[in-house]
Each structure stands twice: as C-alpha cells, then as structure tokens.
Length: 107
Image (tube, rainbow, N blue to C red; front, side, top):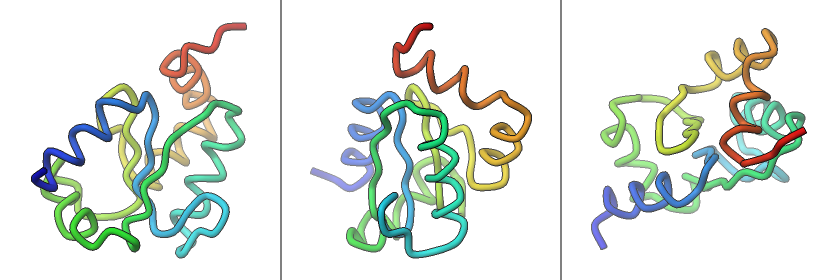
C-alpha cells in the first residue's frame, strides 16, 4: 500500500488521531508531549502514530495535508492543526466538545 493511502486509511478509520514524535507515554519532543497531554486531558480515546518509528510517514505526512510540522492532529478525517492551534483550542475550552463529539461521547 502506498504511504499516502496508509495515511488516508489511518486518518479516516480513527475519529481522533495524532501524528507525533514518540508516543503519548514517551513523547520525543516538547510539542508532541504538550499536544498529546491536552488530548489525554480531554478524556476521550485517540489513536497515535509515532512518525519517528515510521520514516515513510515522517517524510510524506507533510505532503498529505500540506502541513509541514509535527504533531498533526486529525479529527473525523480533517486536519485541525498542529501544536499551536490545538493548544489554543484547548485553552479556550473549544477542543473538548469537538473531541467528545468525534468520539461519540455524550454527557
């Protein structure tokens, strides 16, 4: 399977996915660490892809959505952005409702 097809399949089959350096348990950069922590704080399940462990994805993900940096966070198949956008949404209280809706979590 072509790497862009693999990325598309991952993005479309996971309601919430973060492409990050490392894992949520062992992040390999500060931006990935803060972004995955914000997702964890929202209390909804999410998938992750360690781009360091998959050089093909590391090299090609920036082409997939025309976003040059990591981490990249996708919700319901759409790129919501990277660290800065995610943290701004989190601090404003905008992130959790979006993630809960994507995960199918209801109050």
